[in-house]
Image (cartoon, rainbow, N blue to C red; front, side, top):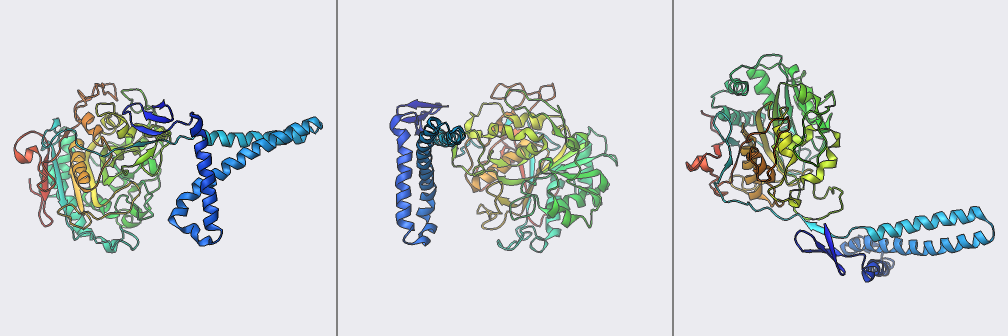
Length: 523
């Protein structure tokens, strides 16, 4: 909370100056006078030559100028309205007096609101790992504990950067995309074929029991932008490749598969248009059944939305296909209790944030709790409760990150990557793991090496990796039973070698298996 010190507002946590104290007398008049000066300057410049209104300096000054105009018009409106109200009362013209009184009250409200508008900003900071490389925390999970498979083919994705759309079939080689996805799935399972890989993955999840036809599988996608623009969303080619392996190779009935982003129901048109001819009986994000109340609980105060997608609750299995995407840009943000679309709510959109879309419609009221820069590293994180629940972690067979294309904001178009081996190409990659923390840790290393992230971007990973004894001291038990570690968190040695402790033989952390473009996944 800000603290008033004379004419300044100071951050209560850092002691940093974050704005002006509007309760100070001279500050109250500073903005009206500034607005009047901006209005005079704007009129002097624009009236002689109206085209100057398009100049950048005028674009910046216009809001201040018109805000000042509104302030002074409201001020004189108050004075005039109350004078006339008093005059009409003396003349016993009560209706006219009432109208003037109402006008005066409205103008007063405008002035009050302008005076009370918060003008201080809080810096989201930039991310710096709080521990060194190759120092794993948590417990690795999976058939091959801590294994994250990565495969790429720079010739698979060839959008020209301007034509509609990045996901158009003529820019994406389906055969190559299917191959690199199958590569990572086979590597995670340690199997030579995609059919064998899915067999092993389902058996592992079931404690040895095989998948049975008729059991429902939900595939959580990221459809945040509706799939009707060049903003980053789930790729139709990625989804096609996933369906091909499950249906045509492994033998799952199409009708038992639901593609979904419950927070964005019926936003699957690009994927449906591309996949429907081959997979007509799959449910494309429709008729999801709403949300089931009280599907899990939180382990600390703050968040309140405990409903989850009925489709997820009723499914036997869950596969998450998230995106390799930064969610927001580090920036100065207005901290007025309202989310601003210019900076978003979390640092990255990968496995944990993707599953945010599974909870019910009141989730928006919990957005501020995702502001990692606003909380210390050792603090409760609602994403741990959500992912750790029996309806998400208890059902997840595999986590996949789609990195064919990648964005620098939640609604950005694709951005080419400079990090090797991409070197100015689309990343054209897939990542997969049974360990959600390890997978997101690898994705975080790639993202932070390509672009800046907000402060404490890995806060949820520290808590999730140590969910049985987290830094915050929270007792995480979303279903009434205390969570164990949700996986292993670690940073690579450097962005060139990209090696983790299992690659180096120095610890029991992450193993990043890199599959070259032409390679076949081996056990």
